Length: 189
Image 1 (tube, rainbow, N blue to C red):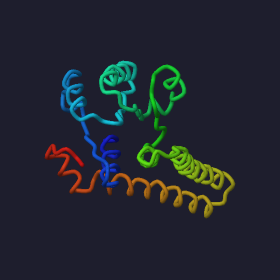
Image 2: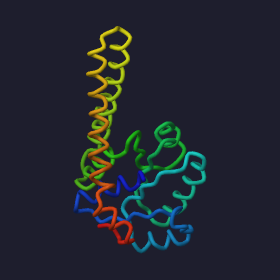
Image 3: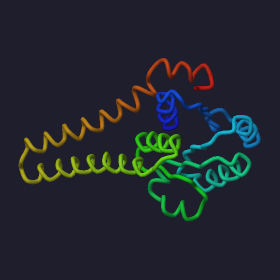
Image 4: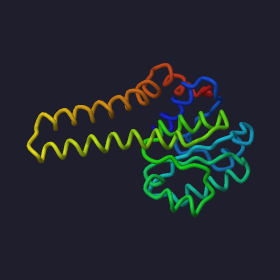
């Protein structure tokens, strides 16, 4: 589902050619995906390793990329928790921490414009900081007995998370036009 979020976000940009492939769901073997990627010639490979199979998944993508030679972008729970170790151990270009939607959008914009990628990091940091601050405020106000403040902070926290989810989930993934195109196995452009 997370890859669909990113594919929907890429689709919304309108000027990027991309292809969404679920190797596990489609039972695609390594040789098949290498052939597809050699024909497609991507600039970026984005993948999300399974938590229980991260080392195998990472080695597979690195092996595949030895032929394709694209920029490697990884995201997910494990890369978020262990990004420093992964960057030291493997040749990744980028690791998206936390919810990747905002970061990936800014990363694509920066790569398209050959610009500074620091905005990608900044935007994610600001959203995470806002969410953390609001959750801290809920806890603080509830412990101090200021119920109204706790309720306001909770509503703001829910609003921020809901707006993020609506913007990047509903609009890009649950939008029926996008979903039907994916279901028809079209190359999403």
